[in-house]
Length: 289
Length: 350
Image (cartoon, rainbow over all chains, first blue to last red; front, top):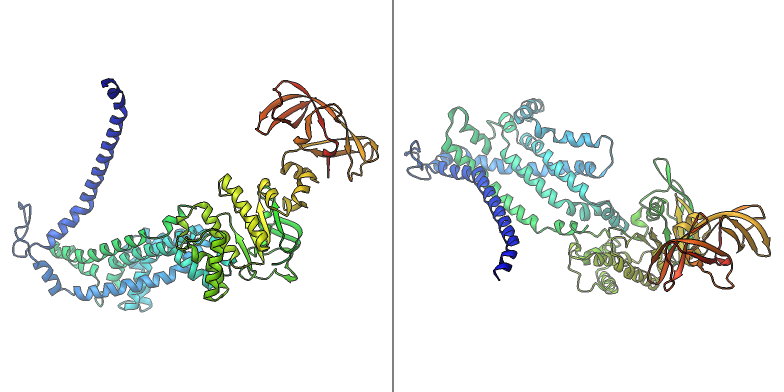
């Protein structure tokens, strides 16, 4: 009895060791996540709640007193409400416009054989790898020349430009992923171009479209450089107010408040869309092909 | 339902002719298979019939109507794809009803016809499922239902069974054949699988390098191949050449390295002294019995037991031959045995 138990033990031990290793890895990644994301958010929340009359300074580990004082200050002495309105009007407009621009571009890049296709695909991504301030500096000249500075439409256009690369990239991949057979089948069954776009292409690129929209939306919400150069002082967005608390008159507590105002809607949106994507057909159907 | 006529069809890609002067007539309700190795132009021919490719030369007629400039959407063909090509974002019902919607068929009529198609393909009860939730065989049946529900003039099949496992493949090909006979829709079927072609077709068109090698019903294609390509591609064949050394009435005597053999000449027009190419099937090379013609003695190199027969690889004075023996025969590699070749088995090739 004892002998059999001994003999059977080796794989039990191995399985246990394996499980222990997996647990260890999980714990490690949770720790990294906490350090990387959790701690900054926690600190931001704390900083935003520090009472203005009881500064949080060395050697206190936690603030002495918490209050909504900083929040009141930001809402009272800055144009945050107007900035919120501007930001959340700008972003949907920019998303819509970049959708309209990128759809035909992505269709051609994803489905047509054109000379220099790889080159164009790379060119489209260039704005992402160029430093934002550099792009903004030179583009602002163009915007000035066309009278698009200090102009809402100009701002929408600027934000559209910043979101376009993501949108085009993601949509191109989605268009590429559609099997030609499915398009041929639709045509074979009598679909004209309009029906093919409405009933086949658009529903099939929808997951990519949503991902691209999130990118474009968050890019617009966070866009500072170009907005700052061509928009202020006529237009203030959340980032321009945030930046006003950084730099020379650095006020961490107020900056924390604005940062949270900028971040929370984005996080909520991300979870909402993720949830929506999960219930999508594509993962189920493409797994079979 | 339509007659299909291809006249001298040519389709080139980058100046290479994928389909090279193909002419074919398919009768109303006929089931014709395009058979050939990959790259032989069979799929290109099919896609040209569907309208996905424009022919560079030649004409396509459905009945008397020239189809060359008619877009795929207006040809009233239905294609079954190798990948099934179901719309992944539509449920089974919407997939099947798609073609009817495109044809602006009334709602009640749509309902009736989709329900009929579902029933015919034994898919009832699965209307609301998404394609991703179906097995390969079920997806295939949805694709078939989607194809027939529009009552097409011509059904086009592009290797529809190659994604199924062997057992299901045999079952579905019987179903396809039955369905086609019941509906009487002219069908063009593309495959590289000779068993499938033999089993399913009214007529087989064997293609090679963009051209038609031979057209005929399954029996004549198998029993009377006309080119060495057809003889070698469909079934197993011993393909040899030899000199005609004698001729009497409707028989010729052939000189081969391992003996002289009498063969029925058929339509052979060669005279004594000519070299001819011919083939015969392994099942026509059987163990010698008293009175059998055309004796060959050969060394057995391999004997592979197949259950119903024994597959033999022979060496007859340096010439390799394939033969068959009954499964009860006692034959081992290394044995020297005597075989006979049926006189009617010789098929003279071009």
